[in-house]
Length: 297
Image (cartoon, rainbow, N blue to C red; front, side, top):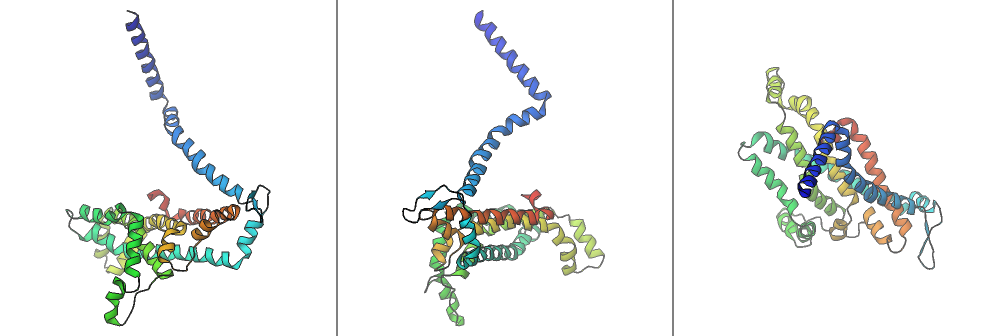
């Protein structure tokens, strides 16, 4: 009898709690988001805060130990040292070049998969585009190292035309990063083109617009937010990458390489360098916010 009473009381408590949550959707949403928001605040934003604070510390020149004394010397050196300025500008330029190449390549591919290919083949084509993402990052980069190496596949294909492959360096880095992040650009553009109403294209043709005018006036304005959404991935991933340039970049240095090389020797300087990609990406996202790209992520 006691067990039955306890069970009934427990069920009553559960029902009252469920009723309370049902009547108060804000409380239900708060309880649902508390754990992930706490994880985001403590681990992600907390680590960024520590990174920013440590950038104002210094390093003992004799022992290389971190001295927790507030100073702006690291940021002063970051803005006044020519090498640092060149590496930062080169890193941003590589990220922009990769983003532009991904957009140029992704648009015709996405147009074919979304508008030209037969409907039954479209899901298979999307899977084929996403398949490289399942392979290991290092495997893909080392595969490109073999392709771009002297006497590799690139040299073999270009030799009949009297040309040679790009070898290792900045062009090889841009080419490899473009291959790595291209699916992130194709997928949002494919989705936008797939959702493009056919009646808009028919209306444009009925009004006498040619293919180029239809593309500029109808297709591009509706797809541009998706292009900007894909650029968030290609730009940020390229800006923070440091492994690819170590494997195929030759003597080229990007900001990730400087951060990696200063972690053990000068941790505060590495932290100051690490704040640059964060600031650049935040500014980039604020710049594309007006396009509606963030709504498509």
